[in-house]
Length: 327
Image (cartoon, rainbow, N blue to C red):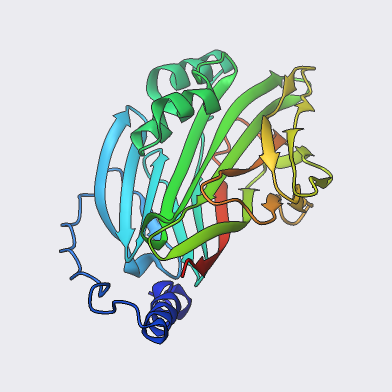
């Protein structure tokens, strides 16, 4: 693993110092011997793992959730990363002392397909966002509340990433749901991506974890062009909770978007797309309550270059946290 991936070293050293100084039961709190690493799983879906910390993770589980959706699980140190993607996707892991970023890149097969064929392919071959996060360990009732049944007529793709760090004290989950706006000889094909990212910091025996920033981005390659995005401005929440709507109107006149209750200090855009970099980034920032999920949500309207284009879209989820001793 890279030098910046030593997440537990500073925490373990500080914890040991505090316990000794306080005269705590050092012997009783000594870490148990590490469990044997699980045997690596076969990568039948051809998922490529990259990034500065990829070498510290091993694939321990992978199964086919639906004809075109594979759930994969990697473990490294006190971190577990799970993804629900198409075959051949790329997963990028970059871990710091108090932050973790995971990117998932894949393409929606548009080659030569009509709108009706895209809708049918999703309905018959791709697991919904709710089905994906349930397969990665989410509570089924909460997942369905978050994403609905996921079979709206305009949906043509979805993919998700879930990870926990600090031995489960940090939990993060993000999904992209892709919808068809319109496709016409005059205007071309437009799609809408709706992103939802939530994260939580928990309390352990000795430490309290809180989220400090929850950031999500979507990066488009090839001939994809972002023409609208939300949020376009910061929402100053002033430490309270409010219902935030990141809706937009597509070229078809249809309204798209995500609406969630968001608590914290600020929610808004962190990077806007331009001609040289089609990346849209949005973020929540503040100091979360312990065991309280915070969210970042965003929506983009994207013009596709042509139906033959198989450009990739990268969903990135990045979280920062703080911790303090309970003693």
